[in-house]
Image (cartoon, rainbow over all chains, first blue to last red; front, side, top):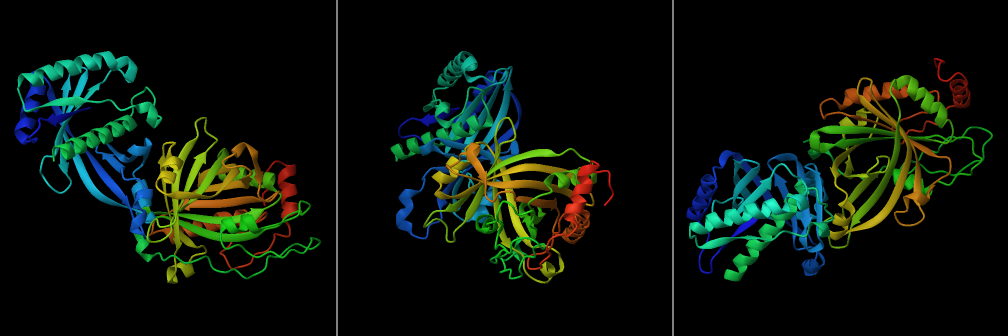
Length: 213
Length: 282
């Protein structure tokens, strides 16, 4: 996953998004459909507000439209990822120990390029339309091993960055692969890896927005 | 969702004494408040032939409108006979069961009310598989009076293996753990019924499932579960009661608060089952 880093003093806007989508089409990407993920920050429901520090600040829940029966929980600070049935949400509701606070959507358009799949994703708040960020998710379909697909992925990313650079947009794509081993995840890529990447990309988006502000 | 009709109540105080067959040591046994209470509070000698206590509990799985009905009973001996009987009744192969159940409670300050969650690890599979379960309060009212069981809500979710780490990180604390070892039968007879017969074991060291010992030597727990919806739970309760009548030669099941006592002819019935491998019609 690559997230868009706007240059200092600029913000991401739909013009940039359009240009990026055009880059995909330049590569003969064929539009295949839409995708969506929802990310929800949870906060503890506390009787005594002063003990907030004892509880995780980065407890995140992720649902993916492509996996309607699954839900993912992540606590980034402790490198925990959990994949569960979507009924876990009902359990959380019954427990009443955590409440959802902020929700963001990753709304994407899915393109197919030969053996690759690219999702051009816009990050928007749950109830609003304002664009908060842009991400691009690149998937190499034939290989599930992260190690084995590393080279071909990096080559593709280089090509992608070159094409985007030609557009002279006010920003660039940044790429930072999370350390999956820290989360207890293996070399075989799974939807848990995706959840970890989404959480990491979101954290980077938030951080760069805070730096600029 | 039917949960609006469920109110949480503490388990009713059951005051009826348990009957014990003649010739046995008199025991001062109080019916348990919950299953867990029973396990920790019961003390029986190893030379006790059998003891039967019955209790009915009905678990309601609210999320998919599928209540689970549960009836418990405990029996010391005749497990093999029960297995033969069940094999004949169900017509399916038994499945082995080895489930590690960890009960977590919310730490201080977390949540406006205290909460409890159970993590279940199925150790019978080659790869242990985890699930998270929440059991809620009991149903009250006219509807509850009419069925032969108690109704409680239950929601379960399968998870990947980090469930314990996650809940600890969220502020939940370890309360107790159990290991259930036994077998189960899953079949259709008016309802999709699952019968589980298992011993309840405790671990001497935290999470040391290899060193588990029975909580009370010789006691097994029988659970009979069937999913139903808020619309048909009375029919499913009837199907389950009918099925449980077939177990009557060996054990009784009934609603909490109603004493049933032992089955006087259980020993003879068990002997009959064992001798001809289950061919006898009881």
